[in-house]
Length: 130
Image (cartoon, rainbow, N blue to C red; front, side, top):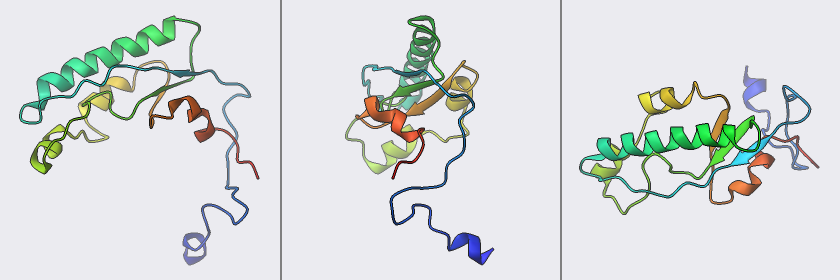
């Protein structure tokens, strides 16, 4: 066990352990939605509205231009962004096992929320290169 934990995730040459993809080619889609901040004092209505919008965007993306295996979104499609204080931020935050994520899960693709550099998201799933 100690041997496993001391094993480096990224090797000195920049490569890392990989696993084969389910298929040789995958279709990746990038979906840009508006950033719509929710009210930090009462986030639920805004979160539900953004979730509805996000689910619709997923469905549209899958029906336009061919089915994607992976859809990439910006980093905050559910809650948007605003200068919340800590109490508001904690109200706005969603848990990975929460109902919003459960609603997204059954949609027909893998979903990833990414940084503003979403067009490069395929590098997250590709093989390591030296």
